[in-house]
Amino acid sequence: MKIALIGTHGVGKTTLCFDLAARLKRRGVDVDIVREIARSCPLPINQQTTREAQEWILHMQMASEIEAAARHDVVLCDRSVLDNYCYMVHAVGSSDHWEKMLDHWLPTYELLVHVPLWSRPDFDGVRAVEPGFQEQIDLLLEGMLTARGLNPIRLETVQQSAWGRSLVDRILPILDPTLPLFNADELDPVD
Image (cartoon, rainbow, N blue to C red; front, side):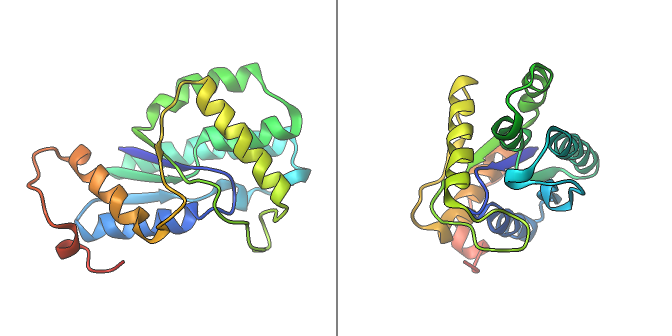
């Protein structure tokens, strides 16, 4: 099963990804994380990005997902090809080639989880902190979700501390619908 957390930068996808992985591992689920690829890109990102940089990111994203899926039952992606593509579109416009690739790749995610724009990015030495840029990427992503008829799980902007628990409650029955129902608090005392 491949799950992608999608959204603009600086909204907590990485934190949620690690929280969700820990909760699943405590339940014995074989899980791996595909970390945000842009952080390791040797080319400019954010507002200074180029087509080459974004293509590098997209190719590496797909390769990392293939590798993780070959080795683990559940793969949590800290981004998807769709929200990575938003940065390319913002910088240089859309690409027929990548649009076709998205048509092929998006069905490989069993779940898309949209993390809403609820906070401003903190300076971390990599990602842009300009609120306008963050909002533009969020708007692009919303437009692409609508245009493609995608219906991700949408997290609410409140109660971020409950996101991991609520997602585990939705994921476990998909992983094994024959599992008995458990009280999530008994299995997951850490919030």
